[in-house]
Image (cartoon, rainbow, N blue to C red; front, top):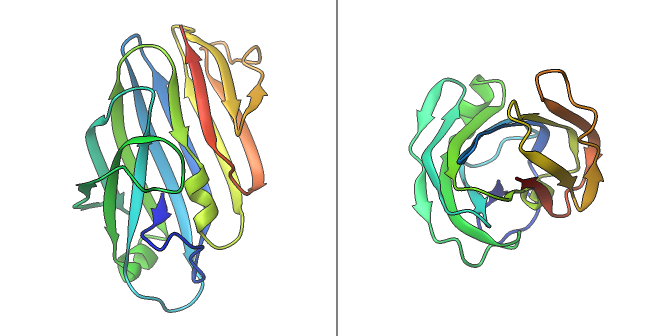
Length: 185
């Protein structure tokens, strides 16, 4: 997720953490991204653009919430984003006061249908003030379809799965370069 144009780092809002949960199925990946922002000083409301990456098609069931309140996101043109190849993007209006009341929590959910490889753009996190303090990845892969996982083009060992097939990875003080890629059988 990136502040809207002109695509520079937002001086007043930091992305403290993100928990990305992916549920991998035979013909879809369910995505939940839980962001915790910190407003550093009084600032105006803004629009954040959330890109959905290729190689699969666009997302279905896209939903954004600040705290428990649904935010009316609007599908936008995917072209022109400085974050990588997007097949779709969504503009999410962010009320800074509502974000503060919700403890900085913004949650995005969607499903990306299709088979084969999957990608999630992380480079967007570089457009918030400072590094992302903590970035957690949770991949639920009960059918063991994920053959490889890479974060910012570095391989993550998929052999260290929990008994139920779950793969987890925690990163700290991250300045995202690209994103996450799953090679799915």
